[in-house]
Image (cartoon, rainbow, N blue to C red):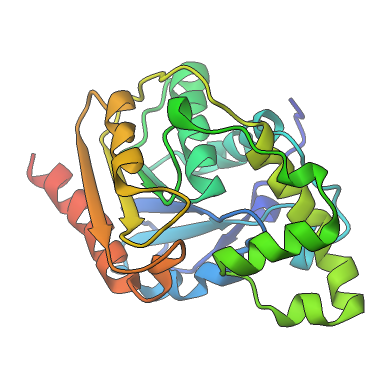
Length: 253
């Protein structure tokens, strides 16, 4: 693992009070970026600092080499998080980000003796229920068709040949991570797990999302909301409220 991780380069930090009571770490989906979650920066109280991961190979990290393995990505994100562990940390990951959040939670516990306050996972099968995929081995058209099907990425990026050339390497790298990760053992995490899914998500049926309970001996809750794979765009208030509620439950407990 690199010893020269620049934490500020890996996260977009939304300003709050000088001494936050907690941090929410948001890990985006395949092809996603920190800007997708920019409205989350003001969705919580002033005691909550929101950090959104900035994956290499896109936006302000366009010249950084893309990462193509979950192990390397999780190692880097975990290392980048270490300076932020002075207050309780909650992890939220959507789609690919859910698997990444799980792997980061394991690394924080096993390597650094820190258990997150909670793990929130969205629109992604549990690690032991993942199905291998080969989309990353197919041509650009197939990859773009899948991204369009899922939503969450502005289609204009693919309509412009110059923009398409810029964004495709990062998207292919992310789908390489997705296609080569899992299934793997259902290693438990020491924190409660909260799972979210859209009721019309064809990629991850609600009963598959419920399998996250197998890695959650510390407690589990599944929330099914209206919508497809990117249900959280329309259901942002419901998701962010549920995250805030988990902090209230922890504080009262």
